[in-house]
Image 1 (cartoon, rainbow, N blue to C red):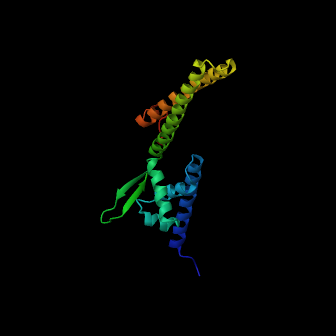
Image 2: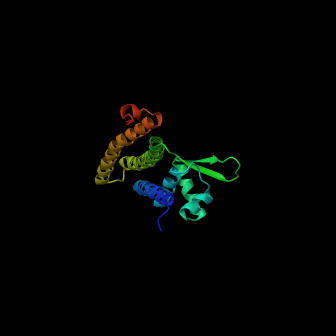
Image 3: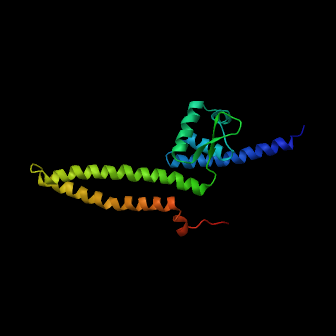
Length: 183
């Protein structure tokens, strides 16, 4: 008995998609997104839009897991809520443009990095300046506080640079310096 060529073609297409889905999931895992959320995004990448039930059926994950994954992907602005005509259920669509994905995903992550670390530096420096002003702090402690303040001051250049990088991504200016190769 011979195989049905139509079924065989469909299997090859699904296998090809699974290569890409797996690589997207692995790549997203490198950047701190769970592999399951990466698999969810990769699956959605190949679909027009999906409901949570469709995601659950396709991936075999629980509806709460799907919901959590979608929420995380929405936080990165790489999945958006949509509406399917004639349906009451929420649908979601993945960002298909990888340049836009890059802009959205990394801007969110890098903005968070800048905020978390600059806030921590401000708090740390305030405490360290108090040591410099304290009459009861030893000279050794004051010297260590001074060195740490200098080290933290030097790190601020990185966060200002990262902030500018995010601004250039958000504005699209980065693509003037690194144009998209159309080939």
